[in-house]
Length: 255
Image 1 (cartoon, rainbow, N blue to C red):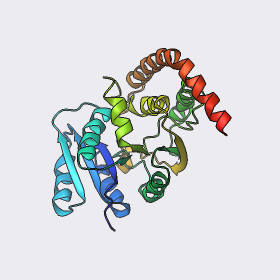
Image 2 (image 1 turned 120 degrees about the horizontal axis):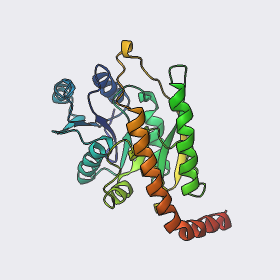
Image 3 (image 1 turned 30 degrees about the vertical axis):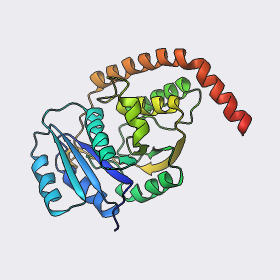
Image 4 (image 1 turned 180 degrees about the horizontal axis):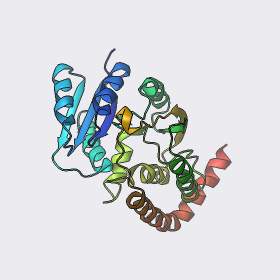
């Protein structure tokens, strides 16, 4: 496999358990390069992934000493990727839920539409917790309201390709988007910026603890974080409403 000089896989990782190393190995099977940002892990996975990187020059490990959250880990990785000359990053979680075989198709979609964000739309199986499947419908509804129907089919699925420069420009303007609020806020703020959306379906699997599955989702804490995020976005939506409405009118006139 010839390593890409424009697109890389970027994986934030915090205490992923047994699935962490498997996730990176699977990603490398389908793409090069693959970068991992260790976000203050304490489960020994940093040593395993560093050993892999020592054997595979297409794997790079960036270590954060303290846990700062998914968005904070990605922010560090995106800045390093930009400095290294990469233009696009496919993000995926380290817990094995996201489909590594779909990486080439998402990268190809990004190459065909380099100004767009390629958003994964999850295909759930029986392993998906019903409460989380129902809850994300609210998030998707709010995301499309505050973007005036921006075409975001799923606001929370973290398997997606971003134009790095656009995402960094958005993240540098806010102190938020550093934890669980990253995925939903990123797509809304990029849509406000005018970044086009391309949706692609992708399967997702939730692993039970007996299968090595690890979840850092805390129902009350993370839903409170999402609620406060939507309140911030609602204020931003009101302030941007005239601009968003004018953009939608121009888009419809052009089509």
